[in-house]
Image (cartoon, rainbow over all chains, first blue to last red; front, side):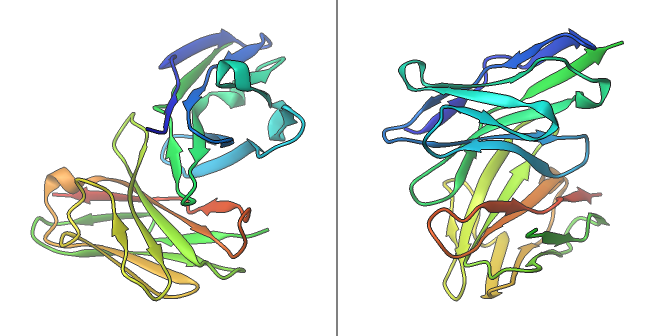
Length: 112
Length: 116
């Protein structure tokens, strides 16, 4: 079955430190992969997406993600975290029938 | 850019009443709309998929008689929570996709439903 796994429920980093949020997927075909961010009580904002081509994709707010087929991973990274990056982050995979399945989410806390 | 408007953003209702949530695509024709439910501190769970002019397809475990979905036009889908109970309190999010295989999925800002 298709699934998305985010191993880390909660991550705390210091402001200015680098960040990596993990995402692993299980999908039979080449997946379409996404990262979304959600602030409390808010909807989702798309950070970046991967359909095909260059495996390193750049997104908004200084985020990037790398698709690694051999590891079935699509980890999100940011070189220097800002306090405003504190939020919930969701990895998602788009299935063949075009609906989207989400990971459990990773809550990011940023220490001053 | 494409925008999906979801209304209301929050609603409080009494047990036993029904609540309608609207999801509109403002500048594109949404051939497919998806409804998600999100409990506090949890992920989004797909409830149903609706295609314009046809019946919605519900995910396993979602009561179709309780969560009525109507996608009557290419710009509007509604989710009606019938005979609401406190356990229906949740954050409901819609998303919409236009025509074309790789057309992006746009999300509404969600509706916070509280049933008292």
